[in-house]
Image 1: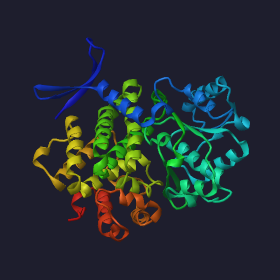
Image 2: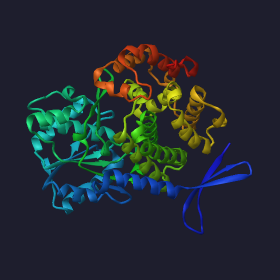
Image 3: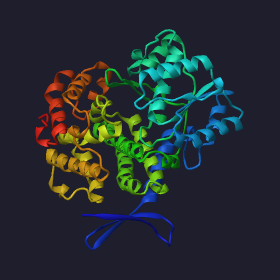
Image 4: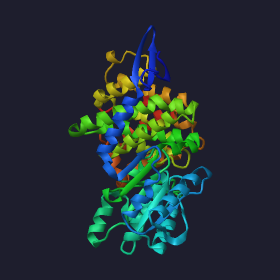
Length: 457
């Protein structure tokens, strides 16, 4: 087994992760991984994204590009107040006034649809030149959706009209309309909401999350100061890290041959930064280097879901919103989908498996394994990784889990509005195959038994 420690080498000042096995050792430069991540993010977003340390003041500069007034949407959590004050000061410094003369309350976890309608009303009342969303994925997703309704609601007033792929762009073109400019100020490393075309909105009554997928809703500008995450609850940080890992992993699993090289680079950098740093943050929540690493990694995850799409684990997570955070649900499901996909993704599994092996999470000889057995070895490593930070590894460990959640997940997989997740799978399913192949995956995830999973021959 490997053990690892972090240190700073006196000769260079460079941070290294030192991995040891027996009498030998392997040195991996953490700074090199971070540099690769920064290059990828710059290639992705260019000068429309301010990321790193001490960048919050860029919010006002971005807002000034779009006019003289901005509506700010943010939650009032105590840990968020200092950053929100900095955002407001930045707007004032750049001559941008607060539209409506107050900060609008952000969204509850999982962006409930009632919060979307409430924020829509505030936009219509304030009539700002741009909207600034300050928060994690839920608030940013809710503002994305509210911007759609505020701009298109006089023609299509129900949020359900936009669930699916490309429907916002289609409606904008139909009516010759445009969305308000939006600036996303991210506060949580995880969802990538500040960088992407996705808006996840929940119907709390049905306990089901649905998805808008559209390039039109990508925020025009984004800001993320990675050290802000030191102030947030550790559980939120861990949830975000596993969500970001899921983005890199699932996109890599299902990527087309034409985009394989880019997806491979994204996955290697993003997954390793997360695997190398999650335990460090869990043990030392104020570790700024590890916080920066997770911020970079989850931004890389945001890049991933703009290159390809997530699939099985994310699809199932949408039906677990009433009993689990998104990151935990994704972390539970990905090992089981890994085994299902394994015969079709052997090349990807060798790359992913090598990362887990370097960090002491695999003790099998991966070179001797192939197909399903290789998938099981990598899936076990994922479960070991989750256990190291106290995450559940089966659905039955989630308080409140019942057979109803399985049926809800099966039903959601057959919903045309979520069809893109089935199509993104490396082993694509259609609606007629869901019961035969997805139900055993859910049974396996409930019991922790890979033997229940049925591969497609």
